[in-house]
Image 1: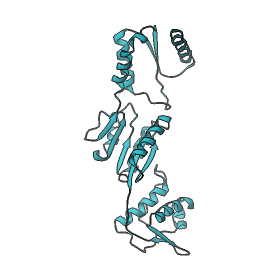
Image 2: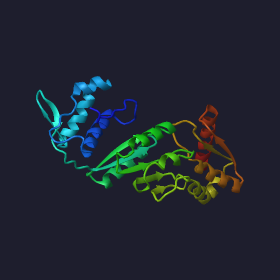
Image 3: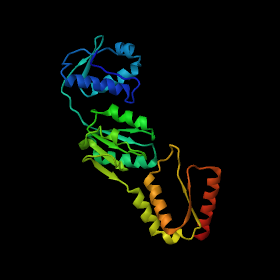
Image 4: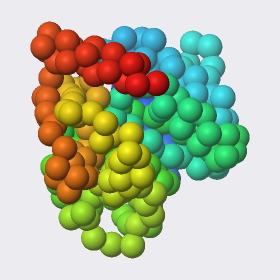
Length: 262
């Protein structure tokens, strides 16, 4: 049973760890055709996991033609011919309507022959690190949304550059020839505000609300672009860090001012 490695405290689902351990053992020649594998009860007893978890892993291997089973005799290696599909690791920040649209488009264009597994780091640096470290070597490509305002290049550099795709936000400290498609938050908001300057100048004060919670990521570049525009045009502004009652009042007053000028 030494070929099965399970980390019950890890991020990767246990059934996936069991499945990948068996596939890896076959690839290394540790398991051959007709070899028996550990029973469901023995795995549950050794690792303190539920039978359903082991059954899920074994059922997936049976459906792929790798495992077979015989009543009263358990599971055995039916075939060592492993056909691997394209496995893609996708790491978003949090669930949102925007991410659903992004995922649906991605999944549609990648085609039915690829397996796409989506995870969420929720702006938690340690969770981000653990997810990437535990996924190493298990996927063909890694699509990462690094929504942090601090440098995470030391984590991302563990992924081979030819397997890494950065989306939405650049990581300035990351070196190498990796694929990336990202927004230029600083210049985008600067150009947008500059283009709508006539609309902006009619207000005495501009309120920019920056959430400090994990509900929504606000890139530093967005704030720098906003401050650059306001500083050049000498418009008074407030940079709020949270939605307090006072801020909500200011927002309602600002919304009313907009409505009055429409």
